[in-house]
Length: 238
Image 1 (tube, one colour):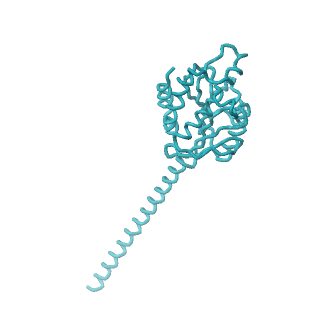
Image 2 (cartoon, rainbow, N blue to C red):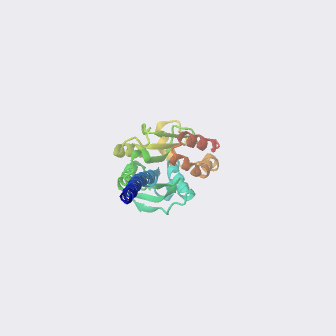
Image 3 (tube, one colour):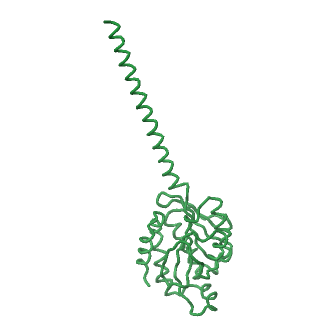
């Protein structure tokens, strides 16, 4: 009788031990999976940053030029999201911060427009940023003043800054095309884009773009492309 109950007790003990081992293994598996998912989520949000590039020419005389709308936008976006101060690096000026929980950099190449790709390439290589996470903000003479379009890839449309980036990095980056209008003849383009915005435009669509667009860049980081461009165009008076 004693030995029977002793065996029964041992059997119960071993059964309980097996159950504990099973659940311990299950818990370990679930914990490992949860950590893997957490690491992947952190990687998606933080380890693969965005690079916003504002194109323009360095120097005070170019500050309010049509060709410098990218620089102007870069400054306002950095202010909106509390980015760090711009510092010289990668042949440009760069600031860093967080938008929508994702790490981002804002770059203003200081190479002059025609060599912008040198600066963009250096930043992308250093931070290991793929082209699909690069968005270049630039003036576009083929769009009416204040018209905004976003696209990935495509041609440079004669824009020398884009031409250099295409040649050095490829074409699969995003382009935020900011319309500045066309002078009417291609021989007049260079002088046109290197002139300041007229006062009426400064107080009109340029002001709207620089003050209303920065908060919308959170949509870009969430990949809500159509909503981003729709809201951007709706907030600009033309």
